[in-house]
Amino acid sequence: MNSRFLLGLLALFSISSVALAGGQKPGSLLVFPKYDNGAGSMTVLTVTNTHSSQSVRAHFLYINGESCTENNAVELLTPRDTVTLITAAHSPDTGRGYAYVYARGTTQAAPITFNHLAGTSIVFDALTQSVYTVPAVVFNGMTAEGSTTDLDSDGVRDMDGLEYSQAPDQTVIPRFFGQAGVGNISSELVLVNLTGGRAFTTSTRFLVFNDNEEAFSGEHTFYCWDSAPLISVSGATSHDFLRNSTNNDPGEVIGLPALEAGWILFDGGTANSTVVSISDPAVLVTLIEHGGVASAQLPFVVGEQDNGGLLPTSIFGN
Image 1 (cartoon, rainbow, N blue to C red):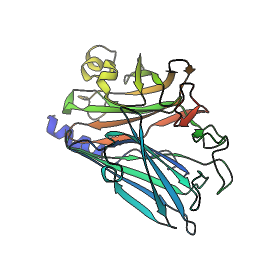
Image 2 (image 1 turned 30 degrees about the vertical axis):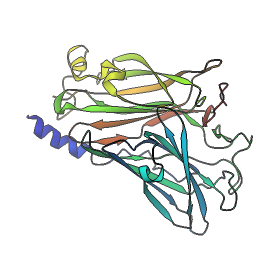
Image 3 (image 1 turned 90 degrees about the horizontal axis):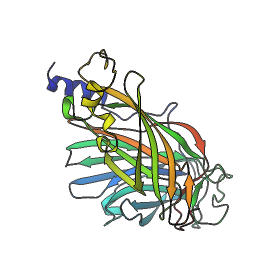
């Protein structure tokens, strides 16, 4: 079976991103794991007000992944209105990183519960010659509809179950293909730190499983936001390692046994500033697969935790 035919079959697998079980529902806070304003890249971001009769202001914050600094803009969305924008035009000179959007009232700047925002993004990447969709991660406002979510008046969007719904505890990437093998697949791992804020460096622990229940542990440390080749995060994801150094199942991938595949379980390790260490930080993880075709996967999540927040500035965290 030649590699061109394998790539054609992989394209069928990669036409669209993976949907969450039960479908995403609109919320009050949307987190977009990746935008890229770099040379040769373009990100198109969409936010929609699904309410049939109420307007809302959508506050956009673009977080530079290298410096963790922010740029912001506000858009008025009338009932059933939608805005689609190129992030480089909406937020020039912010490089690449992640973005989040939250609902504000139409006459005041306070964040509010308005569980009617939906959103998605498309990334065009000339370097990898790929195009992929990355849906927003949605958090519900937990206060009464139309009332402020900033209960402690700290200016931080707290994912604590009181202001917004809680952040995920563990993250499951249900499938990756063996890296640098058939089809030259090269996946990109995108991570967003949700605990501590700008003064913190975060480590996340993970288990890589092959297709025969064998597990290989690892840890990855990053600041604020990270986009890294999956194989650089863990050599256990390489095609050669899975094929030649593990007790893999020779019959899988079923129908394409020349490919290797596995899955990954992520959990927070620690988030550290110069004065504080926070155990089990909340981390958002997204997998993007390149290599002739591209797709982005929003992961499955296991459990919840109440220590997420966007975006504290203190060395003491939130």
